Length: 423
Image 1 (tube, one colour):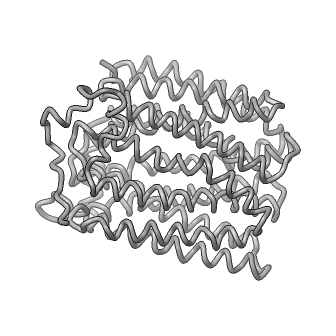
Image 2 (tube, rainbow, N blue to C red):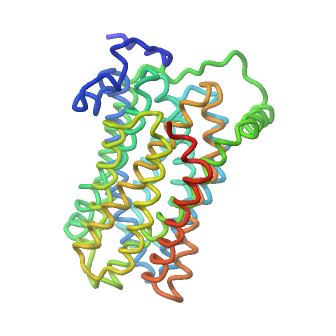
């Protein structure tokens, strides 16, 4: 059956998300078959990634018992993500976006097989993990602007926030069961076995993406300029719309600080709670469950006029969670605050991504999002810095300090920019 493209400008009453009952609004964008297949592909692929990331975190802890090194693994990811975001964004505005996603996912499949083989043969060293993290950052830089820009062609404009929030949920849902399953699988089949098992999810995700018609990856663009001109045009656009920079800053600082203590969770579980990989997986799942709830709340009730309020609540929730996390000595309390942190960050990102796609013309979505996510990519670098500080003052002190800063930022962001974004 031929897949028919949905015009982004469609405004028929049936596409009005606000007019629907809440239980229909939650999944309204999935009524479009191409987006449904695209969403399922992302969900399956993300499931494999979550299981793999659990294995990577525990592998790093086993190879070296340093918060600095654990942070560096994520920091390398951030550096390559940052360096690759602008070139990837330019590429996403010059080539078929669906084909770019397929190519990137294929490289990720090869990388996971190689790491699994190195672990299985006892040849794995920490530099292998760092290289794999670097490659992952490049591929993630390609996936973010490309996938989000393609989403805008799969659903009509009134359903944009719903689709983006569901994309966020597709990335978060595997975090609920994925890390817990990963922790159990590590104990049963070992780290190498976990890496090999994730290849099945990667293959299935690729097959689903292949089922999406290539026409959805096309770009509405009259003519392609040089790479230099493309980059300059994107910079000029951002400078002419400085409110986008203010909103990016309002999201960026709380997100970097909030992610830094989360990315050191494996070490927190081992050193502060005295537990093993199963507990690490369960606590990671709590974070993922919160992200799912936050994403679904935005998908169901979020509207464009509420973007500022959603971002403010997301920042505030992240800061409060960080402080309680640093004070917690209970597994249940830690799980609870990680749930709150996941919900806050998911809602924050869903609102921010929606704002970008609504504001940007199709021919510039890849480039401008690439510019913005160059800044967002700094979040793993924050983990490296936090890890170095934590080696000196402790993981708990770092989390509490970050929480205080985030809460202060929530107040500043609301006063400076977010209050003007909400109607």
